[in-house]
Every structure is written in C-alpha cells, then in structure tokens.
Length: 177
Image (tube, rainbow, N blue to C red; front, side):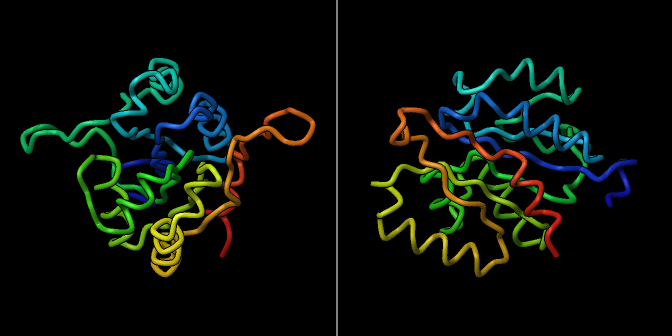
C-alpha cells in the first residue's frame, strides 16, 4: 500500500474502444473492493469514448491524459496496481515496444518497470488479433508479468447480441497470487 493513501490506489488506464463507456462499472467495483481509483486515458479515448465528467465525479479526481509539467504536483499517489481496460491493439503494441509517447503508455511502461501488478482486458477485433505484432506483444507483456483476461472483440454472437465486457475480471486478476 502507498504511503500517500489510506486505501490502496488503483490506476485505471482507459483506451479508445466502444466498450470504454462502461468504465464507471469497473470504478464502482474497485471502490466496493476497497480501492481508491485514478483514471488515465489515452488521448483518443478522451474524445468521447467515455464520460470523463462522470468518472471525475465517481473518483473525486480529474481524468488524466496529458503529461504534467515538472512544477505541477502529482495528482495521484503511486499505484499499488494498474488495470488497463479496455486495452486496444495500438496501446498494447506500443507498450510492449516501450514507445511511451502518451501519458497512458508511459505510465504502463513505468509501472511494469517498478513491478506494479498489472491486469489487462484486451478489446481487439479478430483481424487485428491475428496480426503477428500483436501476438508478439502479448508474449512480451506476459513475460513481464502482466496478467491478461480473455480478449473481447465486441462482435455480436450468433444470437446477434454483443457480449458483456468483463470489467470485474480485471480486479479478479489482481487478486490472483
């Protein structure tokens, strides 16, 4: 647990996928399990993929997406754990390659380097999931100790309904020994 918070602090990294609108469900579940939560979003995700004001109201903290200047105070304490949900093809590949060109990916690179537990719920379509770079990225990230939930494509099933995104699965992954 961090020295800065009474409760363990969870970073939630949100990427630009349609299911991102459901991230308040993850935040509520994390808070019910005793976590304090701060959200970091990719710049594209900030463009309307989720309600950042609702997230701010739920967490009591601003949603971060841009780097702070060195003179600015840190808005979040160091993380005790990180969840990446939904995790996109782009973010996973950049993270695995160490391309920290956004706050979200830079945070993931740093958290992995510090040995912070990280759980990922991928949201990648079948065509992109078949790309060799993606498969290589998963191998590399797993080798770094990153824990993965089952991939979610968002494609409708045979019955025409879209499957639910398993938000709570990310928290379950963090509790795994």
